[in-house]
Length: 395
Image (tube, rainbow, N blue to C red):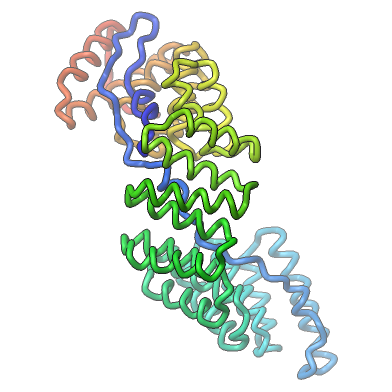
């Protein structure tokens, strides 16, 4: 289901006599895309567990190891990860069979976004302790971040083979298959998980999300109802069910499902956003603003909610908040002319004339590139109204 109000929020809005009405932008983002199961991130290792007495070490070696681990933990807590890595490498020279030290180094590389560097220490940790699943999840996560999906898939398959009860392995595997658009493999993975764990709500939610992406709304609805039956306290299950109801034109049923979701989790960003969508359709702008604002506060990266909040602030004359919201939209959609146009209106209303003209000129160039001549004419009329223009982009 595409975000409907999002498009209108990025169109021009009449303000203080400014000429508006530029073409609505559209978004390729869908609700189901927002709900893909997150790839399990590596857990932080407990280096204190590594401080237990090592039978292969002398008293002097044990004391030196303990000192390095304590100092390394202090560096981790100070987020001085390079120094911590150096200390743990020194510790490995004393205790080269300590798998937790290798995994800790891998984890610290992941924390810095150095995913390639994380691969080798995680592999060494697994070689020393093959039954430790968090090590394998850390390795899979690094592969996913590198978009090395072949090795990520192999790692998740190994986890599921060693421990068939590992739900996260199936969810991570299915997510990768969806990412690479191998929907048949994703379906096989999720169905295997639901057979193995029929009372697992996450498994049914993942299956429902897959069906949503494939626009099989009947199957999606069945999967989300199973998720609700498995866990009636899952707001995500109700949101998924609402998405299928919206896709089938059942706004009233969707509204009820979303209300159930926010009763469980008042700050569920997706539920609040969709409640805002339905409220706009019903003409209840006061309720819509309340839901959109709650969604944007709960998840500042939910760009459609930011666009909607920006539109309301612009119309209400709360220009600084409108600017803040549209900045987030522009960060996500830098080539959207409507967002530049609207932030230009907010800048002008705040007396930031140079920034306003720069933003609107940017919108003009984007409209021209899209061959949207009617919108170019409207921008020209606005600039004439403002009595001046510049080619600077100041955002």
